[in-house]
Length: 279
Length: 131
Image 1: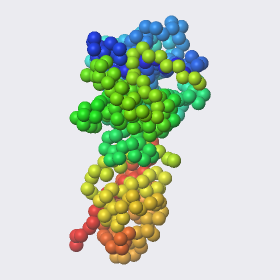
Image 2 (image 1 turned 90 degrees about the horizontal axis):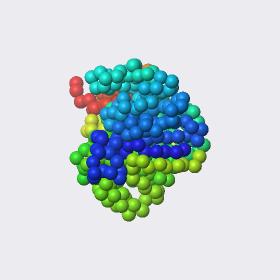
Image 3 (image 1 turned 90 degrees about the vertical axis):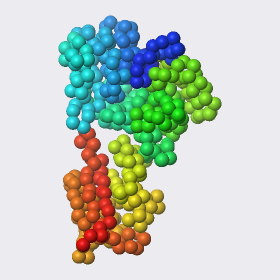
Image 4 (image 1 turned 60 degrees about the vertical axis):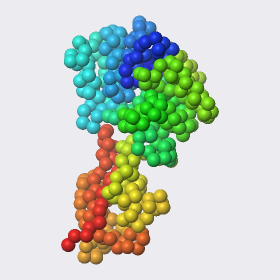
């Protein structure tokens, strides 16, 4: 699998000279299977640049949305491939307890917020309630599961020939936990991340910032490290950087994390990074 | 090892902060958790209670009607909530694990997740000291 990071920022797009190296675009990750299967994880502002480089004769793409917070869908209307009538587009995301995902997405893709309605897009996207379980898209096995974050939110586990990535961009597994990470049977997101070759995980806050944002649905750096250790992943990409965290702040946080000598490799999520995982 | 759904994870975390007794059973009829307040009424902390199946509750706690006649497992609110997937309420007696006989009122309701997932049931109960 080939993974390309198009947006790693959380909450709010944050362009500026202080964020040149890690980038200011919000969540979007491209996953390519070895058979050419294309998954796009979330449609934050980073998705616009992905649209500029997708091959013109692409037949199908699948967009997997984790949840409907704006930083995960704001780029959708600016994703050029949606305006190709010959492209087969599938958009997956979580239903609420009473409303299907398509209806929920259509509320945000309405003329109140955007000039084009979801149903008027030339590609006529097929919108799915993502199954809470494992299903296949092309050569990739995708597992979706609800995770700890306000509102219906899923994380994804994607496997190809024994190689696995886990994507939990917005995740607060430490919420209310008295002995985090504690017994993994009771650890949100565990079954998605366990043993993954690559974990892409929320690392929005410092400890001090987290204390002021408990219940917002995000993790402090130490939580992210503890979660990665508890799930036994091989490599961690920190993700969903707080808009106020400049390049120098992120450099410091990564340095401090590495100095703890965790049993996995740590990479800071940076726009433009490409990772190739052997499958 | 089984892994719990996020609804149960969050419910257990919430229950651990509340002072009213709460008892959670999974869809597989396995006791998942009860909080400290419930532990006081049941006579043993959850951490010390060990594995327990719903089917064992009546025998373990010697549940009975208010008139002292045995109360079968299927009549317990938690069983009705779990097996019949409907809320229920009743008063009954039991012998706690510390040997004390108690009278309680219990309200139980099923836990239904989206996409038709039956997650289990939860009971809230309190000691009855009325007439």
